[in-house]
Image 1 (cartoon, rainbow, N blue to C red):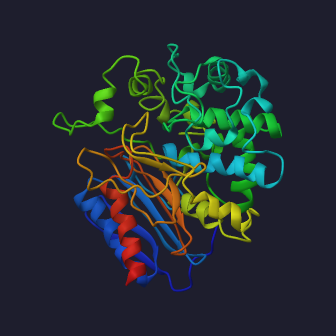
Image 2: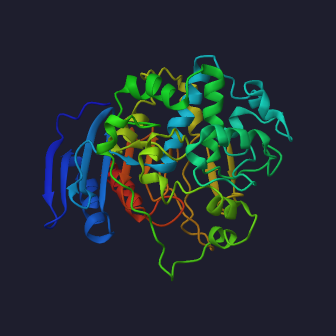
Length: 405
């Protein structure tokens, strides 16, 4: 984890009788602290953390609000960051590739022979990363605890027929991406995804970031507060499609078990290695992960590999799952500014050469090599939308504004 900047000052502000913000903030990035405070006063934040690394030094490290109804958020509290986990999972595949143990352009079946059936024999590992492999959901009715049963999901994915010819269409894989990637890691390395990530990435970097949380850390996990859309919420193409039985959106919403509404706040859910949605960390962990992605950095990625993270390996005006424009690098989301489009669509407004990933409800981590920053935001109360909601975007905007000033 990057060291704190020498000029980062201790920060403490009581917003009311129940909400206090603590941490450190460099004076140059005071706008981030102000935006963080406004999230509590104006945008219904409950408990959260935000972190920013600039030129290799931690310049913002703030936390605040409540972890539970009777406990304030502490410096080392953790929370499920949902799909922001996908970046950690992707980096596990990239690290194996960087070490010459995995070819991203080789068919998945070359490592996992049982996967070859039903038209998947030429589907490559890279297609897992850029959401073109054609398995965004599963058709058979799944059991309630399917997401915490990796072997069950792997068997179903090996037997499934793709929704399109692999490599010919982009469609976000909300949960299946993690199981596909994890099985490739296991077949190549022998370790589970969570063990590999802990041994080779989180451990060496000193990150408090887990894919499969050890029980000794359970008391530090703040429960997720599920978002309940108001009755008058804006209808989007995705929500309309979710009402159509058999559609990809419908199968994702209604045939992916109960992790998102029940298992996410259980010990079993925290212990499970859910590579697409179950990572547990905080803003410091997210920012620290991306801060390591620099040429000559501790993970040993080459400059060419890192530059490739910001290259769009798949992009579409109509994602097969989310039904809106999307852009992906190999395992990362890229800048998606959909604010001026005529139909409702969510955005991730980051730098043009930045790469990262959002999580359901609004958590986000990203790196912007041109700006020299790595950013993380994690929270308990989920917000609306499919990508970055106003709470997270306000923090990102403040960070860029501080750099520009």
